[in-house]
Amino acid sequence: MTTVRNHPQQQPTSTSRRSIASTNGSASLSRVRYALATAVLVSSMQTGSVSAFSNYQQYSHKYCTSSRSSAATALIKGYISSNSSTCRHAVSMEIGSGNKSSKYRPNPVVVSAEAEALSHSATTMKLTPSYELFQLLSEDEGGEVPEQMEGNMRRDDQILKLGLGPDSLSGFRLVDNNKKIKIEKMLPDPFKLVESELKPFSDSISELVSSDQPILSMAAKHFFEKRHGKRFRPTIVQLVAKACAAAAPEMVVAEGNNVACPIEGEDDMDFDYSKIGSAACWTSSGASVIEMEGGVVTPENHQGSEVWRRQAQLGQIVEMIHVASLIHDDVLDEAETRRGGEAVHKLYSNKVAVLAGDYLLARASVLLARLENTAVVQIMATALESLVAGEIMQLKSPPESLLEMESYLRKSYYKTASLICYASRSTALLGGHAYGSNVATACEEFGFHLGLAYQIQDDILDFTAAASVLGKPALADMDLGLSTAPILYAAQEYPALRPLVMRRFKEKGDKQTALEHLYKSKTAMDKAKTLAMFHAQKAVDAILRLPQSEARDALIRLTNLVVTRKK
Image (tube, rainbow, N blue to C red; front, side, top):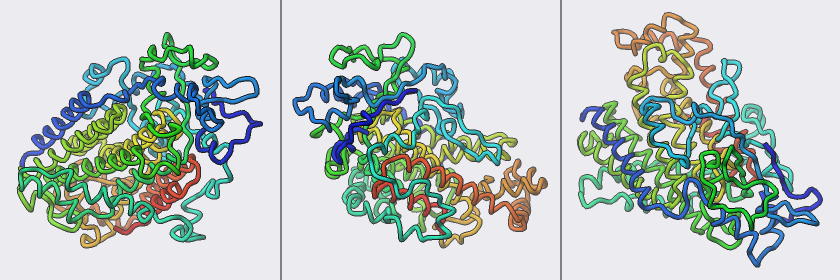
């Protein structure tokens, strides 16, 4: 893997720096999967401007031929020296052509390997589940650092900061700093930073889900008008969008056997970009065409731009998908409350709730297609599939796997982290960064670890916070027969708990016995908190690879909030 940056003797200006770089559960799930299929079909019909494997001639070639060929513009693509201005000597990375076909499909919880293989062509994105790209457990707990592959290959912690000033948060540690300083005083408030930007989108989201059917419309709007909370996921998307705007776009060059990919040293004018089109090259693509002066998003031109609007709309889409999953989950779990109020199916009926969730997914699918980036459509469709996979994994896991910490974390990834991490990577793509870039990889890794930290902390609060604080019943997971991190650590300490976990606390007295062992354990809750902090720190480490900005620093504060919150 080779990375080429600007000439060491050439010092970029402040401008050029930014340029380089109870209806039954099965029926409900079937409807979700039907909505997913509809999403992909609608997307394929409506999306046209950017494919999952884009033709670079559409956007990168114009920087070489533009009459406005300033140093800032040239540096987007070029390695400028005294005797060459060839754009092919780019800020580039070479992708190895090793065969990782076994990693190209999700864990076969829902879709079989055969079905997954049939759904791919030579140019489709082959997404590896994030838990195979990034670390699930610390080495102390037997975790391993995943091997390098497409999706996690570019994780350079300096390349995006070359030519910039020192990073005041370099090496920042959540655990060390919490004891010495108040993070709330040193870092920007993440919610206040984007509050004014999110407001018009938050206000309009209920209109986006309006229906001619009054009951369906009211049910779909319920969370958006009455129980909207802090808009955690749209806030993440908006902050990631602003943080990506401060990062230079990279040219990611893929090379493989018998593949027509750009070759380092070959002149842009002569290269036939239309020949690009194989699976070995898709990681170098996926970036949206940036239709603005200079062709690059910067902090100065980002807000109010078409790129900004599409990224904010992605935040709306993510919230719709999340709310739809909550409505369906509450039907499956027969939950009474959600966000401090009655669950939708209790206010209306199971049928109305299922239809409301389906309708939200359908609306999200249409809006997703209108982002006009098929790479983003594929990524977010995979997030939808992951939500269903998590629900099935929760319902159908074999008894032995219920004791495995990695199995618990994979389920948490499917149900919670997948939507956050895929939305974060998609945000980078909409901002003009290729799928395989350092920027996009850092965003997905950040979202992966943040999502897991959030879920683990949620599971801790299930045992430590009152129902009135949580806005949902306490000990809800145990009522559903689920074992989360605190119980699993207690079972490691007390083997007598293991049969109870494997039979999902179905016998009389099981839950009470499990609670007694958990509360007398001296290590279980602390280990769960350590696991949440492990993922929080990994999230911080990932986002620190981006250039320092107010938005990036706000994401660090948000990560700290996730593991220190009390509700």
